[in-house]
Image (cartoon, rainbow over all chains, first blue to last red; front, side, top):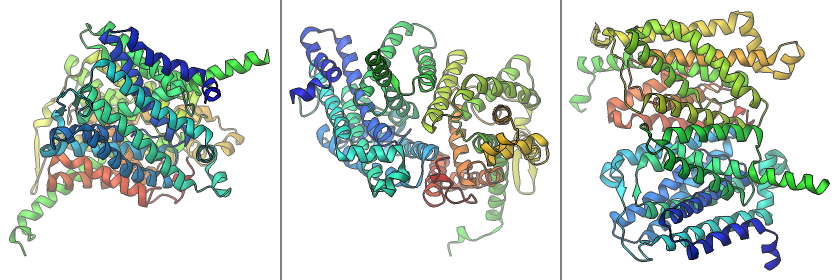
Length: 323
Length: 304
């Protein structure tokens, strides 16, 4: 166990620091940023399970996020039950949706698959926006705050640990994919599907499995997010922008690396928080300027550092080892 | 039989009106989709920023009309060279470097471009809905039992004219032949002495010019705002996949199918639900005929 931890100093430092921070820092603004970094990191790691490890690049992961967020919010507001039950329902729905999308991925590759995932999230967006009687449509749902663990009405410090738990869960799944037979088989599917198939690897089943697993993790984080932020609306939770965000964090940090999504999230979430504070006074709002930078960063990173921060770091280390 | 359902003169009138609406809409969709399918067919890149160039075309029409009172259908002529240059510049700055890269790199490059363009529009022109209201928008034409306004008809005619011109260009000019040769086999084309970089540059510029002109044409018919491109581009993906990615005739036929689905869906279930029909159609096509209704089977699994 200790040896294993020693082999991942980056993760120990990162998650350890996150766990210790609430003991020393009480600033609500800072803790809020930390919760968001961990949650977006966990969501990006969940995306990485399908996109990075299995090579199934989706631009529709907001579908699962939205299903989780809505399941938790509706369970509280419409059925008067706890958000934990909602989270479970969200996972079941997302597994179902993941199987459907996974089935599509068996027939489609590359841009065709990406397009089909966008279409899927748009169908959910339109469905949830129009089904006013149940989902409140475009107005969205405010989630009431009821203090207590069972209702997920937590303080800032407790939320840091909740987000940390989600981050560790997704990280553990990633590490499992790096060390297990399943993970190696998925890497085979990612690198050369036809060769993997020829070697007797059941590529179809594995792709569906990876997407469903990724969907379930995304949904869990979506439920947590809804309870943390306290408001869900369809145009945000099912947006293409959100799906791109999961992918962007992962690409910047390094696709197919366990720590990459968290590195990307630290960078992008801090940038977002910083720019929000800097440009909030500007008349058109910060959103536009922030997103221009974000899009430009995305273009530059995929072009010049396609293996992200983690890949860049390991290349540096390799060069130093040579010298 | 339910008397309301019997095909009386009133129902035939409705059908005629729906048919006319389908044709008018389909012609415009064709111009949007043809540029997308051209870029895909030749460069093997799905341009996720296609809708943003349409949005820029809409804003061009808006500002020309608001500042100089120039009619959108005059601006169309201007928009073709303008967007041709925009396409060239975009190709050189953004696309050239990723043309040989993996799908993921290409997907996220154009997605990033789309995010940048949307937000440049947001910062420069704010998020308000804007409208272009030229005189011909309120000129109603009656033909038999059907009515439509002059803007729709002119937009349709210009769109069809441009689409036909583009198809003719591809079929009968030397440049068009060179572009088709590159689409068929990149390496063989290079061996025949074709400068593929020039072909891609031209392709991207033509594709963007087509969608920019389409943006100007639809400006009087729809609200103009920074993310206006999204609704059209999602539709264009449906059209293009339906027709087979890269197939120009398929794209034209696909446009009319999608227009028919949209028109019939809005008539039967209300306009609020219309988009959901073509997305469902999209997913069904992807599941059952992923290479398109008329495409070669198997293209979708080549990952092209």
